[in-house]
Length: 64
Image (cartoon, rainbow, N blue to C red; front, top):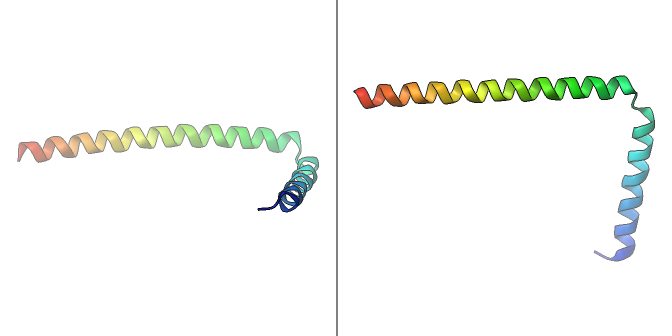
């Protein structure tokens, strides 16, 4: 990729990011942070549940 094409792509990305940044309110940031935290907690709990189920199934297979 030539250097001029790289500069054009970064300019387009920078302009897009700047226009989006101006439209996002602080409420959106807070909502996004809360949803991300909730998603992380749910993901962690589901992974623990799957791990527990996997252990139980493994024990049942060893008994048979």
